[in-house]
Amino acid sequence: MPTIYLLNGPNLNLLGQRQPDIYGRETLADVETACRALLPDGWDLRALQSNWEGQIVDWIHEARETAAGIVINPGALSHTSIAILDALNAFDGPVMEVHISNIHKREAFRHHSYVSARADAVIAGLGTYGYEAAVRRLLSLARAD
Image (tube, rainbow, N blue to C red; front, side, top):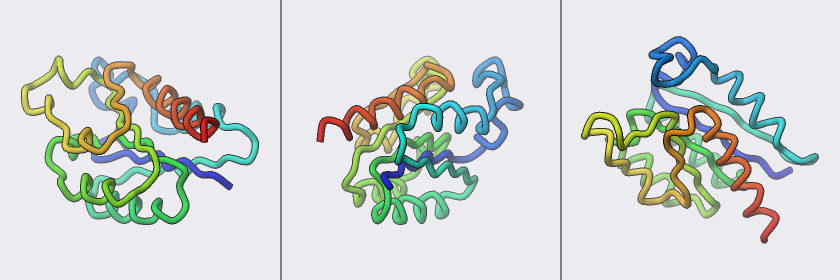
């Protein structure tokens, strides 16, 4: 069964509670529900969140064996983690990078993402709808194969 990994980094467990003026009121559970609703029969979604960089790296390694694609919002690790970039570089499928806010309109340190060097698409500023857009894109790529 084709599986999409939906990976979320630090502090995204607080989605819907933390800075709702920036990140909105939807929770990760809401995001997962919306993304699952897009999947055709026979597809699965593995939705995971960690505040630990190494755990995210381990999940990317796991995805190498089982995932049709990865949707990742690394949170603040976008701007610091070469380890996540290296793990994504070892993944052969498509990678969609998602940021709920427009990171380019925020503090200067948020303007650079290491993950973007590997991502097939970067979606920023669409709120939690960015996750749905990323899943839709992965599905369209799978249909094109």
